[in-house]
Structures are given as C-alpha cells and as structure tokens.
Amino acid sequence: MNIDSEIRDLEHRIAQRRLKVELLARASGRRAAKAMTSPVGLLGAAALGFFAATGVIRRQRHPHPRNGAPRGKLSALAGLLLSAGTSIAIHLLRAQFGSPAQMAQLLLSKLRRSPAPEGRRY
Image (cartoon, rainbow, N blue to C red; front, side, top):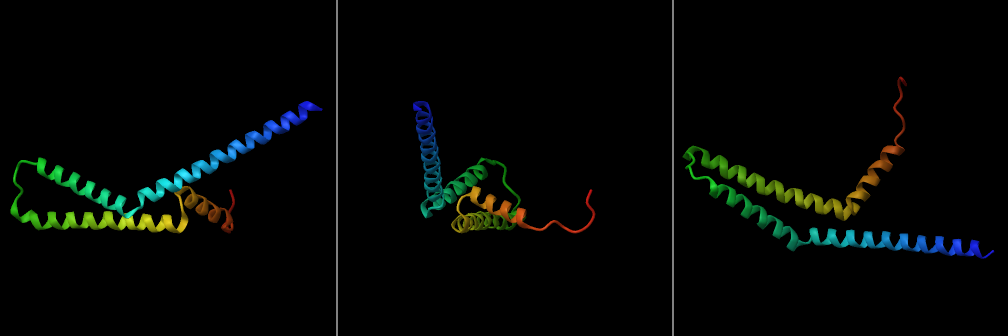
C-alpha cells in the first residue's frame, strides 16, 4: 500500500525535525552558558554591579554620620565577596553538572532512587 509508506515517511521526517530542534536547543544552551560563565562575562557583570551600586550611593544627598562609615565599607566589601563567591560557585556547578535542567534531572533521579522511609503509611 502506498499510503502506509507515505505515513512512514512522514513520521520519519517528523522524528528527524524533532531531533534537529532538540540538538539546536542543546547547542544554543551550551553557547549561552559559555557566554555567561566566561571570564569576560563575569568581569562585566561585576563591573556593572559596581557601577550600579555607586550610582545608587551617589543619589543620596544627605551626609551620613561618621560613625556608620566603617560598617558601610564592611558591608560593601561583604557584598562584593558574596557576589564573587556566588558567581564562582555557579560556574563550578555548571562545569560539574552542565545546565540547570541537568542538575534538576540528577536531583530528581536521586530522589526517586531513595527508599521509602519506614513507619506509618497513611
């Protein structure tokens, strides 16, 4: 029958297109992850955060009391260290596991494998 072969060909083409879309999505995700975790991208994000913070601080027109200055400098330093540590941690997690979707799949697979806790069942 000619109709069966046409249906088979159509299903084959649909499967190929689906595979091409999936491969393109994965490649795009990898390119985006590389662009976001490149050293230049991280430095750019840090510089943007620094300029945004200095812009907010400059808008305040009233002088701050002198006794609050050391605490302000300490909190600014802590904020910079926290943001740098977070970006490094995210970079290391992505290098270890790949995309956030792959991290979630790994977590779900580990949760599914864990045995049910003993005790009462409702």
